[in-house]
Image (cartoon, rainbow, N blue to C red):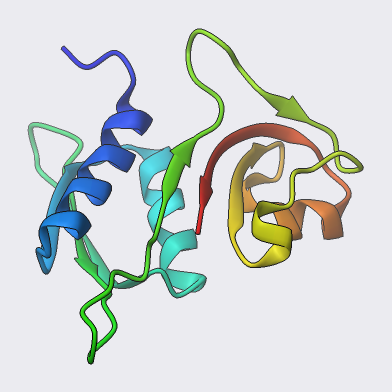
Length: 133
C-alpha cells in the first residue's frame, strides 16, 4: 500500500527520466491529473493521456520531454515540498519562488491546483505540493 501517492507520482517521473524512458504510466487521481496538466502547460512534458478503467480510477500515460541533441531531460529536479508528516502552507505574499522564477511550485488552493505564479496573480494561498525545475 502506498501512503503518499503524490511522492510516488514524482518518483516515477524522476526515475523514468533518469533512465531515459520515453513513456511512464502512473495510477490516476484527480490531483495527479491536475499536476500533469500543469506540467504539460509549462512545457516540462511532451504529452499525456488519461485512460479510464471501469474497475479502478485509471492510468495517466506521460510522454517525457528531452533535449533532442543532448538527450538531457526537461525536468531537472522534482522535489516534494509538503508531505503527510509535515504540511507546508503559504499565503500569496510568501509564495516560494523556485530558482528565482525559472522553476515552478505546484500549489493546491481553493481555486484548484495551480502554479505559484498564478497563485500570486489570483492572490490566493494554499498547500505547496512540490517544486519542479
